[in-house]
Amino acid sequence: MLALRDRLAQGKPLLAPFSIIAAIEMVELIGHAGFDGVILDTEHGAHGSESLGSLILAARAVSIYPIVRVRSSEPTGIAAALDAGAAGIIVPQIGSAEEALRAVRAARFAPQGSRGANPFVRAADYSGSSEWFAQANRDVAVLLMIEGEGGVRDLPQILETPNLDGVFLGPMDLSHALGVPGEMGHPKVVAAIERVIEACRSKAMTTGIFAGSPEAGRRWIERGVTLIGAGVDTAHLLAALRSAASAFATDQKFRP
Image (cartoon, rainbow, N blue to C red):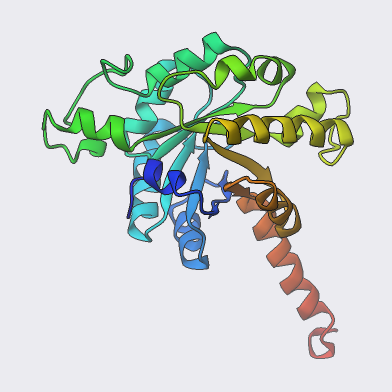
């Protein structure tokens, strides 16, 4: 597989559902279903640092990109996800250029950043190789979430952050920040998203977004988004189970 950073730079759509079920089997199912990656969601999921390693290994075993949405821009959480082998990270709730710089520097080794250096971790194949630091700086993708008024306001400065790969949009949080909670298709939300997409395009940066349906994903791809957070595993699982339950319930052979 290409490094995630190189894959995103190609500008081809990459589909990766969010996963909040901390189970190896769920990651495997996402891979077998045909997705390109999985976003292991430590912000809203039940994932702890002790479970990330096995989930990342499961993703790599089925040839999909393990991307981790970390809990915050706090450096130790970013380093833990990357040491466990994440191909990239998504950092939530970025509201200023200062927060953006802090997050990106936490994901890069010196001289590009301040990530703690240990070449004996899983991401380095436990090898102790001094060459790994430069390779990690080349390969790891870092995206920052714009989901509030501060992030939209400071976007021009945020996009100037050195070694940043792109922006990931959170329409749900953005709808709350813009005073239309839950209305992800509201004109105010759509207009803000389109401004971010255009700004990223002008900088040749990746834009990602959460899309709860294929229709939403298609709409944003047509506007230039390439990383699609293709729904959430719990919602997909519930929909499939409801469909199965309905099929059984409507079959007369299963009725009492």
